[in-house]
Every structure is written in C-alpha cells, then in structure tokens.
Length: 184
Image 1: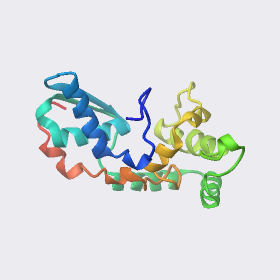
Image 2: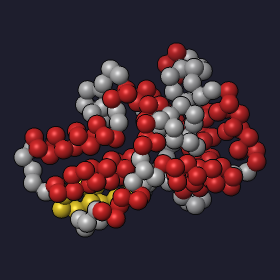
Image 3: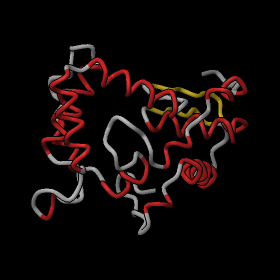
C-alpha cells in the first residue's frame, strides 16, 4: 500500500499500522504462504511487531532492525537528542519548526520540508547523533525530498523530525512484546 510501485490511496488517513498489518497478511494469503520469516527495519520494524502481535501463528521468525516499540519512549529520546545538540543548532531547528515546515519555496517545494530543514534536522542534528559522529558519507538529506509528503505527515506528523504526533503514535507495544514467542 503506497510503497514502491503500489497505487497510493487518495486519502492518506488510510495509512495506519493496523491497515498495513492487514496488507501483509493479505499478501501472505494471496501468495499461499505458510509461516513466514518477517524482517522489519525502522517503521517496518514497528509494522512487523504489530503483525507478530496479531498474527504470530503465521510467523516462523521475526527479525527487527533499528526500530522502536514505543512512540512515547522514542519521543523522549528525541527530546534528549535535541538537548545534546549545540545551542545554536537547536535554536535553528526550533526556529524553523516554529515558523512552520511546509508552504515555503517554489510550488514543487511547498508540500515538503525545506531543503534547509532537511539538511539541518537530518544532516546536522539527527544522523550525527544516531551514527555517533560516523555518518554514512553517501547520505544526502536532500534526497529525502522524494518522499511522499502527504503520507509522511499522516504517519510521522507535521511538527518536525523530533516528535512523532501522526498516526504512528499508536505504536505502543513494549508491554506486549513478551507475548511474542517465535524466534526473534
């Protein structure tokens, strides 16, 4: 649903973790697969956890990479991440977020983060923290401009990279993970 060459929904509100869990199960059934090994990375890991919590009987293995099980906890990490930034960087990010992240620039830019925000938030703020000052030399934050922004805002939220307030706020699985018994 809305990934790769899939047709996108007219209304992005249909993109929920719960709906995408059903998409995974529909594909598994359509391909007449028995138990599957499911790999989830980043958001895909949150989706894989939700799938395992609902359809564990259809899994042989669950593989999770660079993901999260609690949006509340992840938002707390984002707060700490911003606190560790230099005051100048944090001020620049806060100022851009306060001014609004969308509607700036040329017509084709109005629906997405500005290049300045992508470079500042991802290139200078987010990824140096994650990679512990060993960033991927091939990473270009401007390349994120190709994102489906309506979908991104629906899922992540509209208030920047350091708070998830879109429909991914439903990801709260930590207390239930102990019920997953397949090899993980």
